Amino acid sequence: MKPVISIDIGSTWTKGALFALTDSSLQLSKKIAVPTTQTNLVQGFTEVLASLLNREKLTPLKQMVGKAEIYFSSSAKGGLRIAAIGLVPDLTLQLAKLAAMSAGGKVIRSFSFSLTKSDVAELEKLQPDIVLFSGGTDGGNTKYILENAHKLEDSRLTCPVVYAGNRGVAEEVVEIMKSKEVIVTENLMPEVGQVNIEPAREKIREIFLKRIVNGRGLSEIVELFGSQPKPTPLAVFELVSAIPQFHPDWSDLAAIDIGGATTDFYSNTESYLETDTVILKGIREPRVKRTVEGDLGMRVSARSLLDTGRVYIEDRLRNLGIEPEVMEKFVEKISGNTEYLPETEAEIQLDRILAETCVYYAALRHAGGWKETYTPQGKVYVQTGKDLRRVKAIVGSGGFLAAEGSAEVMRLPLEKLRSFGDEKKLLPENPAFYRDRDYLFPLLGNLVEKYPKEATTLALASLEIASDEGM
Picture (spheres, rainbow, N blue to C red):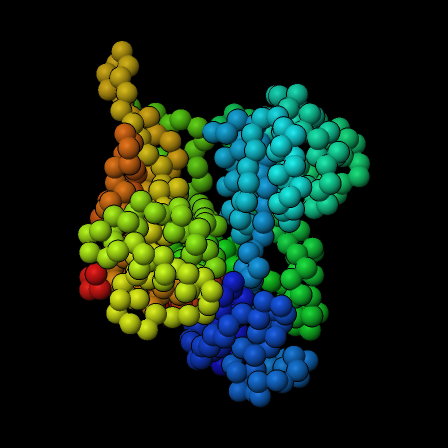
């Protein structure tokens, strides 16, 4: 058997697992998690690796080289922060967001049409890791693109700019932005309705490897082990993408990963079912999609979760006879100690409500919807976003959903969301709920590029039907 190690450096915990690789399968041998060492990410990585290899905690990294194949990922310090610039919100800007999120990034702000002075000032204040600059079909609009290029050139931004817009002015954009690092790639939407996000995704990943690794203090690991890291969300995205390729019975799949800082929602299903009664407004979204919500997290982002989800949270507290002040105090407690785990039944119940809230708002933003309208031919439905009705299985991952056995934590918020205002949300109709029992999805995502069949098989074998107990 060949030892293979996968490590994920998260915002709260650094997790690792030792796998035994045979000719036909991966087997989990050992797993460990330690608090992420935010000031020096390598320290926590070293501690996890030493434990998996049965070495002393302070064993130098260089003494562990060659003892196993090493793969790793990172979402610590907030992950890859991307600002997206497009033209029409329903078209190129939406594509820019999809490209950024499918590459493992977190879109911290998005802008459409012409940048204003306040937009540029906000960009300078945010200091993103990358600006994804798009807009216009090939041969189409150039006015806003050239205006925005001048404004970006005059800004104090120092990050790389990935240009994925109208190819007809790509050279002009580079010339205008001569003091910036501009990486040109293919247009996100070369023709109206044509989606082309792969080239931009690849450029974003290249920047992560070349620039972000050094900024996160991970270059020592790369140099010693010759292993390039992945953004954690990209690792999970690739696993969710690969599962149906090797296991066709799982062709309609979703996964919800609730972390300390963000909640990620993944889906692998056809986004639009063409019929005579459904009209699609905006782009046809890709089969595999990821959205990430930086205001939805169980620890680092608990305060923003409380603000975002106040309506849902207060409704649940009222139904359970709990005063809102009790949740306020709990959120204050866990925000000040992000490693804290609930110790009483009352705290566990409050944690569950926070997890439900993450599911509710992540699903709200990920799933599409439709509204009724009437035409001379009769009633039709106008769809925006992605149709998730055919999803047959939903996997709960992340620290809470992996450990919590209750399907109700996922089912209840989805049921409450089915009608949102005057829009019907296109949510899974009768899915089975699973939990990522050993929290292996991020770790196996690191391995799926080299060992796709083995990693996807173990990922499914590690799932457990979520029970209906708990709430």
